[in-house]
Image (cartoon, rainbow over all chains, first blue to last red; front, side, top):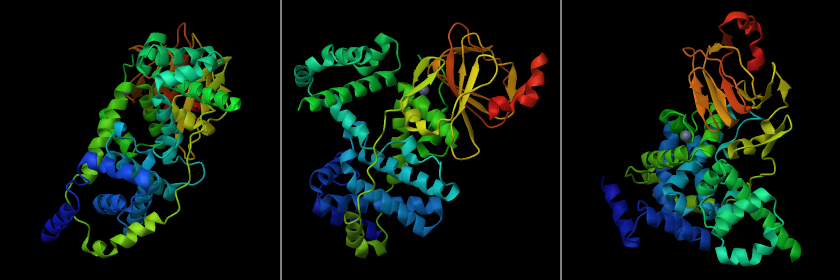
Length: 206
Length: 223
Ligand SMILES: [Zn+2]
């Protein structure tokens, strides 16, 4: 009990906010992504690692495997902090999904081999491309249209329509899906493919 | 509008990674197609992370001395392999048609085996999961019918594209149907064709008339 109090007090002297506070945790991740801040990572580690360790020890009943999970999860937090998107969920939830993926792969590695399903095949939490997607969508609309209007005409019809509805008419992807009676996933992939194509066109002009 | 969704329990097990591989892919594909379940999944992720991280606790005493070392080891560790998504393989081609695959299936494109004709206007392609689990694409041309059958185990069917009907309802893009031995049904297509993803944990059991003759061949639908 005393240990707990001490731990909390000493943390409080360092900073008024704690990693339990979602905004603060998100901020710590942002600092790791931007400046490789060791202090920010230490703070996250102190909060999340012991909890992961307790969880993984219960899960695996094996101290060493539990350590591996903590190590791998936190290594991804450190190296992949730039993949965290605060608008998608909390930092704790992001770290949970990383731990879930690593647990999944550890469990399955013991069971099967070669063609086995991996966590990445199911939940692309740590895949890079997913994220650049969001940056693409976040491109300033006017800028995009000024630079890209010329190229848009070169897109396949279905992709051009999606881009026009989203970037010119300002519809949401769901509204486009409804308007065209196609699945939301189709709208997303058309938009993504269109933006990829546009990027290629721009680069080929460089 | 999607009418049929996985149960709350299945969504929880999906988020936790505790479903079978075949069911993870099937439920994951439904989620790709279903904004309603996407919202649910986010809530469940939050709840599970709350359960995992929410309790107040201090690091074990032995940690405090080693904390700097542990942090150091991670900071100096090599970055995990760069993983990116290759989305060049988003389409299935069959019978002169092109079907766009939801993200989960596109990521597992390399697991899709070749198409074989089953009966009449039906085609099947396996999804290889590296285990003895069975996951198949089933394509029914328009006006096709699967003879009435029950299931010895569970059958989960997800409509990827198109429509099929049975005695009780009509199933469209994104609909997720889970049936067990207590259900008897005769899936069929009408004007439209239908591409589904189906997982079975036991062979179909045909129940009516001549189709009972199919029982020895039910592995056609199964493996
Ligand atoms: Zn749903």
